Image (cartoon, rainbow, N blue to C red; front, side):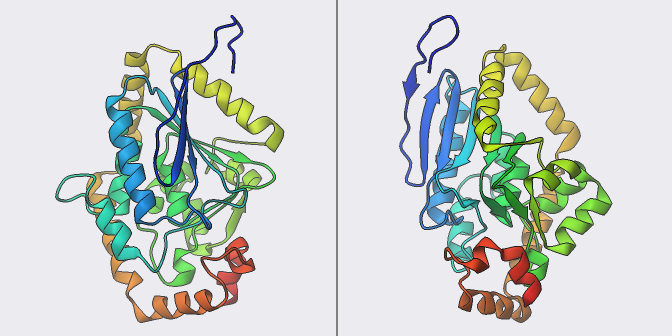
Length: 286
């Protein structure tokens, strides 16, 4: 890539197991690549922690843009068969009380760089909660799908959706999104405020690229101070994050939820199947 003045962008790559990265003029493009369908598991959690560790100390990274290498899935949800494993990995990120995925996502919200999520596939459950934890969200008009299926599965959105959605869309719409457990397309997600903007595929990356480069070029002290003060006004107390994480851990072991999870596993959950592609509908059919 070349700037209008003809200056070539410096590029640098960082190596993680589940995230491909490239640094271009202050913007780190972080592409999630965790086959077969980008489930949130312990390798991804470990890589996210490493990325946050590195970008918190690397002054060259001013903005991080997350997108997916999979056309169908951004982050579909957690690996429901490895909850203990990814939770243990998340517990290595913070202090003695920060022992959940929600606490790790809180760290994402407070990260030194500005964080932008580009949703070009499905982001549900903790995948949608990852989006909410980022500073900004932009969605594909053709391919974005965002949902909170947890209540339909008998569990609880324990990584931030209760707290973030009330602040993003208001109490009534948060009730509808979480209790309805239905999928939102990009247009509806923009209309109610879940994402900042929805654009056609041919415009999406160029739009985000321009915005990210613009922010990366501004004085860092001003950008960081604005982010800190917006977070002070808009993020939930950490205590509420811990409470929600605890509710998820309790309900994930409840017989009603494990039975519903089992029924969906038999129908192809965690595979590239109709159940995963149309999970909002599949939950309603249980």
